[in-house]
Structure formats: C-alpha cells, structure tokens
Length: 636
Image (spheres, rainbow, N blue to C red):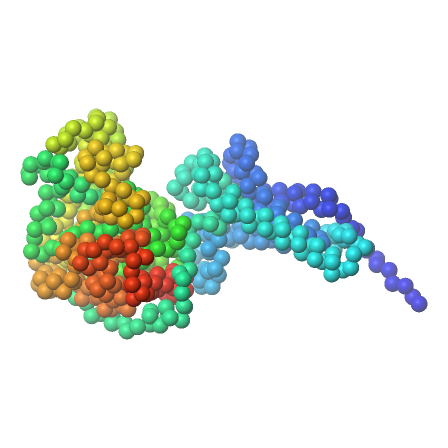
C-alpha cells in the first residue's frame, strides 16, 4: 500500500510554551486595545507605568480567555485569533461609540445589536480602517501559525474522550476563575475609583485613561436592571398596547423647572426670617394662589442624584426599583423610552430640555435623545450666560426659558420644556461665589457652630436665588395671554455637612438609610408647586381639575407620579395606558413608594412586606412594565 505523508506537519507545543505564548499574546492585544482607544497610547501608557496594577487588570481578562480557548482547542494561536478578534471588534465599537455619542461601550450594549444597526445610518461614522486592518491581519497570521503549531495532547496514553474532558474541564475552570474575578476584583468600586483620573465624572475619559479592557470588564456588574420576579414579556406587551388617545389634551404650554437642591428647609420653626426677608417668599405667595397646587415629591436620593429624579419624573419609572445595585438610572438607559416628551410631541408640541452644565454629565446628551426631546441645550450651546462664582445663575437660565417659550409661540406651537438648573449645586463653602462674597447672616432661634452657619448661609443664598427665579417666571407668564402651566420642584435635599451636620444642629432628624424610620421619608422630600396663569386656569377649568386629582391632603407623592399628574392636569392622563396606570396607582393605592416604605392614600405608612396580595400585584405590575420598557419595547 502507498503511504500518505503530510507535506507540512504541525508541530506540537507543551503547556509551558503554550502558557508563555498566551501571556505574550494577551500583552499584544492589550496594547492593541489601548492603541485603538480615541486617545494617545503614550498618555495611557504613562499612567500604566505609574499604576502597574492597571497593566494586570487590563491584560488578565484577555489572557484568561486565551488560556481557556487554548485548552479547549488545543491550539493557542487559534484561541488568540478568536479572542483577539473579539477584543478588536469591541475596542473599535468603543471608539466609534465615543466619537459618535460621547459614551463608551458597556457590556449591556451587546444586547442592542439590532438597535445599533438601525441607528448607524443616522450618524456620520468614521471607521478606523488602520485599526480594522491590524485586527484582520493579526487574526490571519495567528490562524496561519495555528495550522503549523498546535498543543501537545494532554495524557496521550488516555482515550480521546478523556483528553477532551480534561481540556474541557481546564477551560471551564479558567472561565470560572475569570467569572469569579469579574464579581469580586473587577466589581470593586473602591478599586475602580482609587486610580487617579483627570475627571472621574466623565466616563469616556475614565475609559481612555484606565484602559478599555479593565473598564469594560468592571461594568459587567454596574448599571444593571434586575428582571422582576414573575415578569412576562407577553403580559407587559398587552398592558402597553392598551387604548391610545393622543390629541385629547388642552394645548397649554407646560414649563417644568427642576431646581438644584431646592428645598423648604428654612420653613422649619427654628428659622426666624421676617416675611419680607424670607428666602422663599415667592414660593409661599404662589402656594397661596388660587391657581396652584403644591406639596412634596419623594425623590430617589438624599443630597444627590439629580438625574435620577429627572428619570423618575419624566418616565414614571423608579430608579430605586431598577436594580439592587443601580445608582444612576441614566446609565441604565440605552434605548428609546416612553416619557412626557413623547406624549407632548404626539400632540404637536415643541419639546426642549435646558441644562447649563456639560452634555456628557450623567450621559444626558444621549438620554434626552432617548426620551424624545426635540431640542437639547447645554452650557456649550447657550449664549449670554451669566455666572455667580463658577455657576450659571438661575436668573440667566430663566431668560433662556423665556426665549425658548417665545420661540415656540413664534412657531405656532405649544411648548413642553424641562429645565434642570445648576446654580445651587454643592459644595456650600464660603468661597463658592467668590472669596469676598458677603452672605446674609442665617437667622435662627438656636445657636449653630461656625461650620453649620457657613454651610447654611451659602446654601440659603442659592435657595434665595432659586425663589427669585420662581417669582420671575410666574410674573413673566402671568403677563402672557397664552395658557401656561409652570411646575417648579427640587431634585433632592442639600448636602449640609458630613453626617447631616447642619441638619442635626438645627434639630432636623433625617435618617436616609433607616428604611421605615420617622426620618426616612423626610430625607427624600422636596417641595413642588404647580401654578397656572389665568389663561391656563380658564382653559383647564383649574379648580375642578385639581379637585379631580385626588391628591393626598398634604400633596406628598413619589416623584415618579409627578409627570403623570402633570399630564392629567392638562387632560392627557388617559392618552397612554402607562401614564393612565400611574395615575390610578397613585390615586387608589400608593401615592408614595420609596424603597421598602409605602404610604397609603389615607397617610398610613407601611412596608412592602405588609401589603396584601392585590397590593403586591399592583407594584409587581409597575416593576414588570418598567422592565419591559427598558429592555424590550421598540420605539422608532
């Protein structure tokens, strides 16, 4: 018989050489990922040399994947070709996403391939062809090497199935180690936040500086949305396809102003301001107006979390119910969502969002696009801004709201506007408005430490300016013939010192971490007032419409119900099944739901565990419906 021989026989490699090559190839692809990033490789490496742990954190996931597949395939080159191609594709996608949307690639984005493909045509994408070429060429070279060099069989004296089982167990063990690291070392926020970066709040910059492989792996455990128990996509789709009735509301202009850290803390009895000097004199006057309704909203966070309140108000979902770990609702948003913007847009409104801060902060530039806002303006887009210290003044922003309104009137459209201010943002140190700024003294009936006085004097100066903004806007819209409804609210209570220092000295007992305690809900309550000018009050039949809201006696509701309440006031409460459900939930069951604490319509405070079956089912429906919107609902 004629014998067949291989012209180019593959050569076997032992485990030591295989692992050594895995380390070298992991290093190569780590460098490639860093090179693909939209920043200088040299600047990234300079930080890595100063923080050598970053080298390990970036290379380790790549190395473990190469080892796992090398064991499975019995070929380190085939493994590296697969892993390297995957890393290259993800790095290129990260670069494109940063350049197009000013946001890096997160693991959760991998479930949105269909949405990403359909949206790609909306952007002018500049593909990094040199990076693509390097990824393709390196992959081809590794495949070629894998043809000629392969790993030596493990225990060649054993049967084939035994050898395959050993390879499989080795690969599974390696992947298990990687999974364990993802949920321990890579999940550590303290480690992630310990590395020095130029701007910890600008996520694309953090990715560029700490390395895409490390940051991407870290975010496997962040910004998650938990699947509620009992979730049924079919059931949620059925709820969402209920009767739609767009165009039924009155064409009233709606202006919503969420003022940074706005609170009525100075209404506490220990403050002794005379009426003419009261920091909130405009709020008090408007509360007494026959054309207003007021109370408090229970917001998601204490002393922070502005964007979470925006999310709750505009979508009707609850930040605190999304996940056991979610701290930023806006970072959990990566698809088009139902919101107040879409309801008003469907009724022919001009819609806008104004915020005199950075577009990238909280990823607002993308989220408001997902909400459906037509016009989105940040500080970089605004003209003639006025500053107090380094903060854009509330008065300056009031001018922009008025200009925005007049522009809509000129275009013949009613306006829905949501504005988030920034002036009274912390920190409340005496140099906030300049080293020589003279703050009016705090007037209280009890003695305070110098530190508490300083915090309060700076904060109250900002609250005074916020109240002046409220007064200016009501005066302006009161003089207009167009119907206008103004909604003014706070996003969270102010941060007044470590461990609630100023609150404690004032005798205000806040316990934001003690769910169900006396001071728990008070830790999250900020004031709101809804006011209508004469034209709007007449158009909406104000007295009867407000009475039909069936608000609690003290007007306290969760922030998630405020948007739906606004829709009901303008005659749009039934335009979508979602917001109709929210108004029914607020009216008939639970006006306040905050973490594990629930308030009944009669004011009784209870807990989730104490609710009967029907109550549990209502809240479950809210959670499941929210999950469907965040994960599955398609909105073109």
